[in-house]
Image (cartoon, rainbow, N blue to C red; front, side, top):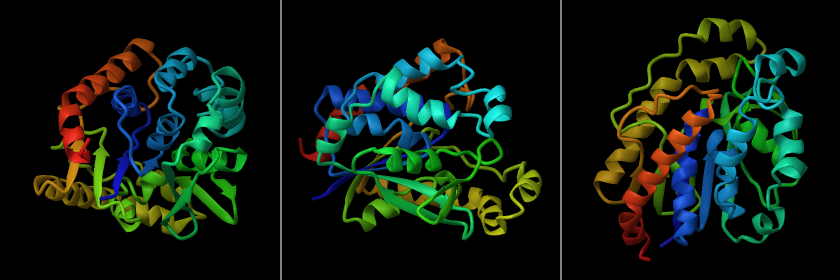
Length: 282
């Protein structure tokens, strides 16, 4: 069997995912491939580089630094999450990503971004986390309205969650027939229509297909969770998710709140560890 790992986004809800992944690392849990969306990509890369604790460490350290995430950054650069700081200064200087371990780890790592021109998802395998890969990662996490579209390889890209929020089917298309899916919303969560669609029609008027995708995102998301939990109930997928809403802001700056959600992820990872080992045949 081929085992895959699928990581939902959700901005700072991703601290939950980081907690689960650190438990996996501490217990030698490995997969053939991982697909991450948005925060699932930016935090999930630390799983491939095998850096326990890096996600929570730098998020707590820089949560109140205006260069990391702030209205000031949005006004000054066009990105609430500063592109230069988050995808250059931080991973290369302030809290370095282990690029050597990342590249040597045989696990495949894919991210999802959204093509602004077509309104369709685009998938990219990140093999080394070089500058081009980091730009693709930034594209995957570039939230609409608070990020500039990212241009690379002939694409104009924004947040992957807009077009494929939980890419289980993509993971299956790669041949990973048994997948662990980490969600950042509880099982009973039902996504509602986005109230900001009227504003997006104005701000993203150059990209009408992407706006259409966003207007339908709640239907896409709810269909994906239905598919996932139907497979989970048949034992074909293992889902790890919070028991209740995490109650954290998408741009949370309180280190205590970040730590709280990270610890909830660790508790979930520990609780599910026997099931994960059984599912993977460890």
